[in-house]
Image 1 (cartoon, rainbow over the protein chains, first blue to last red):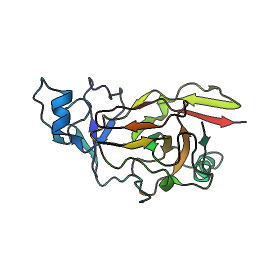
Image 2 (image 1 turned 60 degrees about the vertical axis):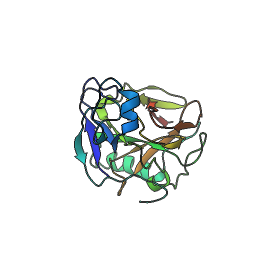
Image 3 (image 1 turned 120 degrees about the vertical axis):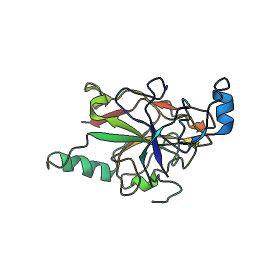
Length: 69
Length: 143
């Protein structure tokens, strides 16, 4: 999967000088619930915390899921 | 609450000191769904045993070496605490989180579990869509 970094300084997950990582992206349902007044875009690469477009940090990243390596 | 430095984590630390191996300027905090809210892996457990959420926007978060605070007295040892880490808002279920662990790299491929711990209140935390989990990690060496 692709790891994105949110560099929006107003994002609540943002820490100064520290990248905030996420995968996937904001879903349509989330956009409607979390940002109802913004008419915000959504989809792969949009930060699920602030709704802003993130940048690709690293591709083909893996987690330890269900014993996979 | 349980916490552990697995063998592979101790090996990594001993490689840095006293063996003068390459230092880690950045580590990564991960969440685990394995084990329970009051248990962690064995000393022989490895990173692959600390299963993580597989979707829903989950990602390990980086911790710079400078984020770790002043070393202070712990319970039977010395400890340091990093600033609070906010994981991304979940876009789906992450399952039940039983604690956190520190990895030496972002991706799971070939990584090492340095240390692992339950949450202080030994509470399992189910993460569902739109939930946010924040963790303030503490690391301790015992005497």
